[in-house]
Length: 166
Image 1: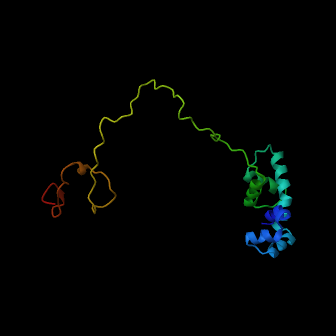
Image 2: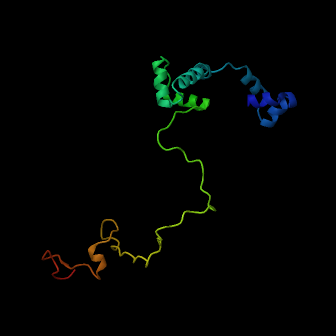
Image 3: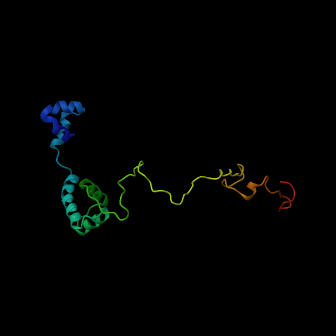
């Protein structure tokens, strides 16, 4: 807010800008007179140190290694604070692995011919799978008897398959 008002106060004045922003002019003047916070003062000390360490280490250090380097330089800083300050400076470490692909293929460009003459068409659709009826336990999965017309019979009294009724 202060930067916005400072940028336009010569043209419009402070009070009309504050009215438009729906902020009391006293809020602007209080923010202008306020001393910098402890965090802002600490950041002002750490920003040049982080930039110097990053440049001295071939500009490859990421957050974790920068955090360790600051600890070796006897600066006790939190890792998330180092990440925030590196973002603020616009610096980052080098990543291993593949590079980010920045181009997109042209859909209108000619493609290489298919030298194998593959056909990607099915001869027929896959037949539907039969499932166990609800309440027979377990997950829905195909069983051996699902392909037959009826499940095997089981005689509860005899405890044998294929004997008696279901």
